[in-house]
Image (cartoon, rainbow, N blue to C red):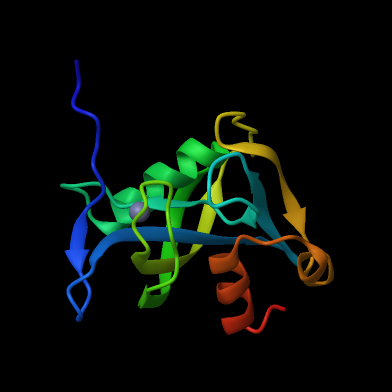
Length: 146
Ligand SMILES: [Zn+2]
């Protein structure tokens, strides 16, 4: 059986266990691609996930975008890279070191029911009213989108 991938681990400056995560901001015209997550942490979010052991950020980005949306990342640009110490995951780790990318994609959006209740394109005005996953509220505020 193939080994189950494990998130890449690190330590915060005060010694707490951290995982590494990537997120994708995908824009088409004036709309952003968000999915309503089936898994904890809940809420509307961009495609995102852990960087697995042995992967780099871009490999994880391409894999997560494909797994959650069906889209292929053609080009990317790093927007933010920072630790988010309050961003808890389903594995109980509360600190994540994030790399957030703007992505340019090809292909057609698909709904993967293991990942999301819905997937779609939202304007800034709509995003401001959505129940966002906390870390995505943080990114959209930081990007001055909401
Ligand atoms: Zn984690």
